[in-house]
Amino acid sequence: MTNPTPVHPSTLFAVDGLLTDEEREIRGTVRRLCDEELRPNLPGWFEEGRIPARDLARSFGSLGLLGMHLEGYGCAGLGAVAYGLACLELEGADSGLRSLVSVQGSLAMFAIWKYGSEEQKQRWLPGMATGEHIGCFGLTEPDHGSDPAGMRTSARRDGADWVLNGTKMWITNGSVADVAVVWARTDDGVRGFLVPAGTPGFSANDIGRKLSLRASVTSELVLEDVRLPADAMLPEVRGLRGPLGCLNEARFGIVFGALGAALDCLETAIAYAGDREVFGRPLASFQLTQEKLADMALEVGKGMLLAVHLGRLKEAGEVTPEQISAGKLNNVREALEVARTCRTILGANGVTLEYPVIRHAVNLESVLTYEGTSEIHTLVLGRTLTGHPAFA
Image 1: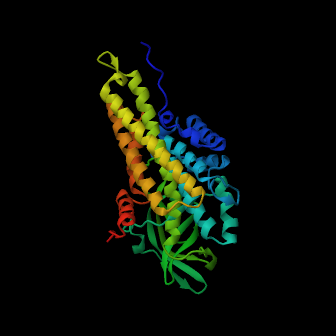
Image 2 (image 1 turned 180 degrees about the vertical axis):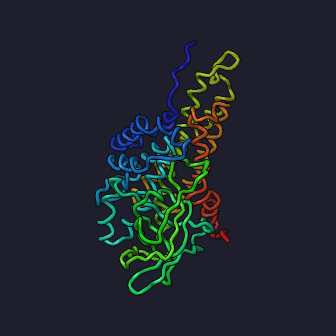
C-alpha cells in the first residue's frame, strides 16, 4: 500500500479560502523576505543578542509593512487581516521582528495617527512609514506593568513647557528610537508626549542578559527633568483610554503573530519526524508522535480561524477589546504549548539553535506576558462573563 502524500497543516482548515488574492500576495511577499533575508541570520542574531534594527526598519518600510493598516501619511492603508498575516510571517521568523514592526506601527505610529495633531503627524509619520525614523512606546514602568493606573512618571507645567520625570521599562526599540511616545501623569490626567531622541535629560539604556526576545532591542527609558514644548503633547486624548487603545491595536497583531511561531515549530517538527529514524522506522510513523502532531495542527487551525474572524470584525469596525483579549489569550497560550511539544519531538536537537523551536519557545514566554499577561486577559474575560471585576 502506498503512503498518502502529506499535506500542510493549514490544508485541514482550508484557511486560504477565507483570504483575498491581495492578502495571499502580501503573505507571500513577507514570507519571501523572511526566507531569503531574515531566517539565515536569526540564529546568529539571537545568540549574539542584537539585530541591525535600522536596516531592518528600512527593509520593512520598503515593503510598506510599517503602519500598513493606517491611512495616509505614506502608510499603505491595508486591511486588518493583511496586517495580521504580515505579523504571522514575521513572527514565524522570530517574535522580535514582529515586535519591531508592531511597536512601530501599532503603538508609536498609531498613537500619533490617532491622537496627534496634524503637525505631529506630518513631522513623524511619513518617515516612520519608510523606516527612516523609528519609534517606541513608553507605558510600562519598573513597578507598574499590569496596573498602568499606578504609573509614577509625571509631567508638570512650567510656563508654556512641560517637564517630565520618570522611568519606563521593557521598551521595545527604545535605544534605537528617534521618538518615544511617553505616557505620564499630569494634573489633567494621563497624557501622551512625543520625546525626540537627544532631548536633554532623556536617555535609553539597553536591557541585557535576556534569555527571550534576544533578536530585539529592549530598553529602559529614563526621563530626568526633560523639558518639552507645549506642542509635544498628544492633544486628542486624555486618560488611560489613550495607551490602552494603542495596546488593543498591537494585541491584534499578536493574535496572528503567535500562530506564525507555532506554525514554524509545527512545520519543523513534521519535517524532523519524517526524517528521523527510531527503531528502524521514521519517528513520524509512531502513534504518540502522530497524536502530538494532530493535536497541534488542530490548535493552530482553530487559532487561525479565530484570528481571521477577529480580523474581519476589525475591518467592519465591530471588534471589541474583550474579543481581542480572547484571541491573544488563546493563541499565545496554545502557541507556547505547541512550541514546547515540538521540542519533545526533536528531543535533544530541540534545544539547539540549529532548529528554531527552542528560540520560538523562549520568545513566546515573553509574548505570553507582554501587552497584557495571560492572567490579566483571563480576568478581562471573567469580568465580561460575570459582570464582576476581579483585578483588585
